Length: 399
Image (tube, rainbow, N blue to C red; front, top):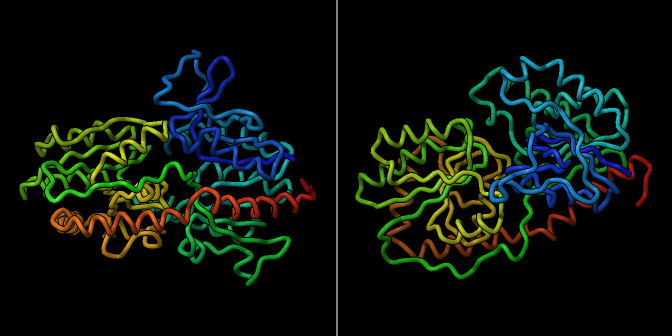
């Protein structure tokens, strides 16, 4: 039996028919998880056809493979792009919706919502995976925030199955039919699991904490740098405030997007060019792990998350982490280590305290590993497989 997985991914297709993405999040190992309960995965995503067979392997990972194929939507970016090519997107979602198999929608996303409107007309069972809160993700675009919150509530209420990346936060705001009814049934069911693929070999226990830091190495990871949501500007402000207090700082930003030039210019205006390092995409989890291990602290002043994979990966390496009090983050970080997204001073004060108290850093690292172990692959896989099995059985197919 096939499953259509409708995703917000951007995929590149080379002329030899291979599919590539610039983040491990949408690589083959991610789609492969659905094969535990389904015979084939049809990924519905935005796809760009390239004119070459060449891709830079350090920036891209293979997305297709055995049992995983792709169904193309137009490669559209941004609100303006959707406005210009809306008709093309609607026609593509109509075609994709009528393929064989049940469907799973990773929401919120514009392609996901548009595809869902077409899919419900087929009267086939479907489920949703809620990965972020649109109230925060689209806070700077009030109309989209209102629209996507409304659409997500409706989608969760009407879907046969709903799963969430948080343990409790998103469920309360966007309740499933099962939650409204007060129980799981054969027809309506709910679960929770992160989309992270955190294997035992990723964990790291041998971190050393210094009595004195000659240079404090701060790491920030956000694959897409196209808006202000992930706190890049706030972290630059944090860097400046630490420099003013006599702390030598290096900040490494992993990721790429339209705003990189603007953030670099902002850093230059503050005299921080030598302290800020934008290293682009890192498609390999092994390379990301090396950056995590070789950093002193992970600072993530994000405005919008479901449950950030990058934060859990940092925690798994025993890296002390500071982030914000949004969405599911309070479920995994101690209250002392989360702050309002724009409160640079509180981040600075906590960092100053930590570098003067290495024992506290050690305790943070140990606690982070203990929390991350709850999101290890085998534990999440068990919950995911049960959820996918419910959906498959609803379609009348046993595997």
